[in-house]
Amino acid sequence: MAVWKEHDFWKYEIFERDVEPEMLPGFEDLVRLWQNKQGDRPMPAWADFDFHDFVGWHGRIAMADIFYDPYDYRYRLFGEKISEQFKADFTGKLGTDLVDGNLERLEELEFYEMVCRKMLISRVSGQLKQFHRPHVSVTFVEFPLSGNGEMTTHTVMAMISD
Image 1 (cartoon, rainbow, N blue to C red):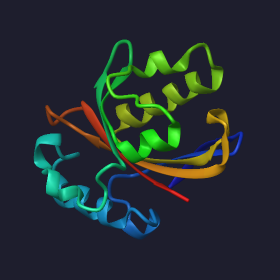
Image 2: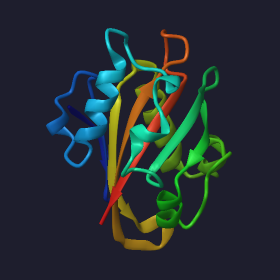
Image 3: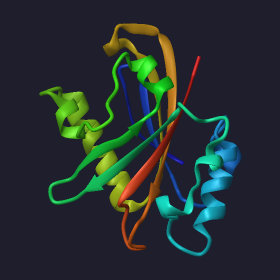
C-alpha cells in the first residue's frame, strides 16, 4: 500500500493486485471475490462477474468503461446509494465532463489514469465537502478489469459511507 496524495480531507491510496483482503477493511469480501475471479491473469474481466456476486453491495457499485489516448472513463453504472451520497447520478458521464475546470478533479483524473495503466487497486476516502455534505465520509475501492487480458478496459468500484 502506498499513499499517492492527501489533500482537502481526501486520501488517495494504491494497492498491488495481491493485496491481503484485511488491508481494505469493509471491502474484504470484494477483494476475495476479485482475486478469485482473477485466477492466474493480471485481472478478471467484467464478464467474469454475475449480478449475484454483488449481493449486499447492490446500489453501492459503480462500473466504468476506460478509454486511452487521451485517457478518460465513462460511468456505465452509478449505483443508487452512491448517487444519493453525491446528490447526482453520473451514469453515462465522462470523467472529463466532471472536471469542469477544477484543478483537484484534474489531479484525480491523473490518479485514475495511473491506477488503470498500472492495473492497481485503489482506495479513495474523504468527506463530501465539495458536494455541500461535509458531515458525510465515504470510502471507495476500485478494481481494474480487462476485456482483452492486456490492459484495464473497465473498472468496478464499491462505496461504504458513514
